[in-house]
Length: 131
Image (cartoon, rainbow, N blue to C red; front, side, top):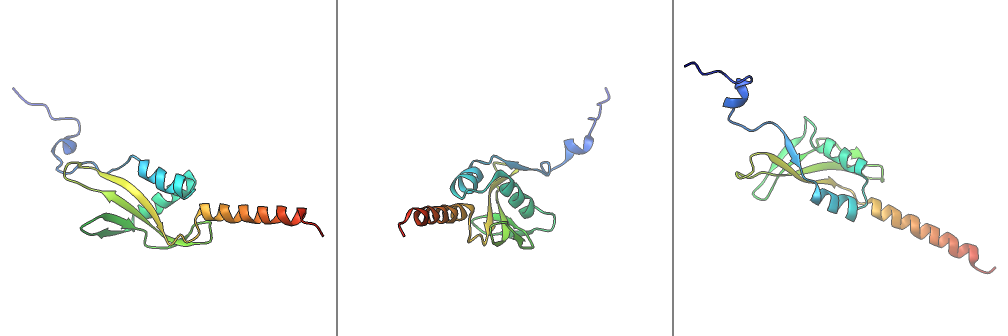
């Protein structure tokens, strides 16, 4: 009896998992959006920059990451180099994007909002001061 070949034989016999990165996003959401006040669009820009085709692999005992080769203006007065932190284990055959870090973001959106708030408070105080 002849055995039929699968419609995509290359997938059946390939040794490596499909070339994809899984994003669960809880840590990215908690650290970048909730804590640092980045927008979803900011985070997507960070991810795209860090995962660009010309990104550089940074491997150590503690992590595997991809660094964007070029700095970019982040819209908050910083020139940042985005880093994608990947979780790679033998138990999980697909790479998971654990976090993205805009390295060099001294001015975070949360800091900018605080400054705007202080400026507004200072204006309100000066408007209501006598004299």
